[in-house]
Image 1 (tube, rainbow, N blue to C red):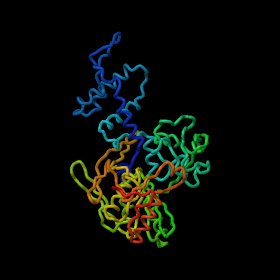
Image 2 (image 1 turned 120 degrees about the horizontal axis):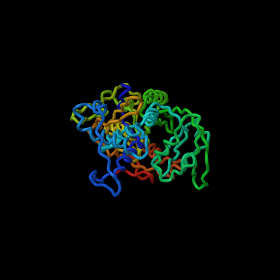
Image 3 (image 1 turned 30 degrees about the vertical axis):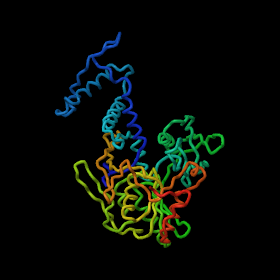
Image 4 (image 1 turned 45 degrees about the horizontal axis):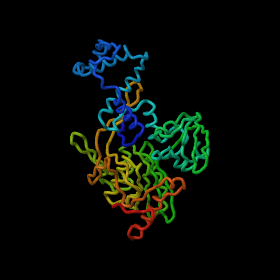
Length: 429
C-alpha cells in the first residue's frame, strides 16, 4: 500500500468536531456589508495582492483567488494584535475550505492529529493504556490494558474521568477529553475519577509507550472461540491469523467475532479480515465513485475460519471497515449479528500528507456498498438479535451482549430457533 496516500475507513470524532467549530464561526459578525461604516471608524482600503502572491497563483485561478489574497493582506495590515500567526491562518483556510464541502469525513488533520491517527492504526501510542467509552457524558474507562500504567494505577471499568489536570470535563466532549489524556511517555497526568457512589478522587499516572493488540482471542465455555478485533491497522491481519491458528487448533464448535467499538481503519485490511471467514472470490464490498465507476473487492481465500458457525457482535461504535466485515458476513448468512445498530459510515477516504510536515488532508473519494448492494451510510447495519448495553452494565462489569451472542451461537449449534424470551434480547422489528 502506498504509504503517502492511505485508503482509510474510520472515525475521527475530534476532526468532525473541528469542522463543526469552523462552520459555526460564521454565526456572528460576518454579515456587515463592506460599504457600511461605523461611527468613528474608517474602513481601510482593500489591498491588492502582492506580485509574489499573484505569481504563486496559477494564472487561470488569479481572479478567483484575488479575494483570498486581499483578505490575507487586510489581516496582516490592519488586525489589532500583530504579528499574526501565518501557520494558523493557513491551517484555518484549509479547514474552512474542506468544511465548506459539508462532509464531516473530509477534513484537515494538523500535525498532532495526523500523528495520533497514524499511531492508532500502527498498534502503538503513548498514553495511560486503557480502552475507553466516548459515548457517555464523561470519558469512561471500559478496561485498562494489561500491564499498562492505567492498570497499575488501579483504574477500573466504569470509572468516569471528570477532570484532567484540574480542568473540569463537565460538558466537554469525551473524545476531546481522550485527546487530553494522551501524551508523551514519562509525562504525568492527574485524572479526577468518579467511581460509583464514592467521592471523587485523584489518580496520578505516568504515561508510557503502549503496544495494543488489534486482534486477540480466547476459548470460552462450551468450546466456543472468542475473537476480538479492535481496529483495522498495520498489524491486524497477522495478529488475527495468529489468533485464529491458536484457537482453531483447539477444535472449537463455534466462533464469536467481536467488532464492537471498532472505528475502522484500512480498506485492504477489512478485505483481509473478511477473507478469514469467507470462501475465496466472494465479493466483500463494492466501491462506488462519483463518476459512476464501481469496483469490487473479493475475498482472498485460505481463510482459517471459513466454515465454522459464527456470531458477530456489533454496536454503535462499529463503523466503516468493521461494518464492511459485518455487512459481508450478514449478506452471505455467514454470521448472525448481535448487538445494536452500527454507526453507519459507508464512505472511503484517502489520507494525503501535506508538505513541510503540516499534517494531512483526508478526502472522501467513494461510497462503499455491501455484497448485496446495500448502502449503509447514515443507516448502519441492523442486527438479527438486538441487545443493548447500559451504563449500569459497564459499571457492574456485565456484558449482556456477549451473553446473548453465546446463547445465540448455542442455539445455532443445536439447530433450534434463536431465543427471543431472554430479558436482554429483543429481535429487530
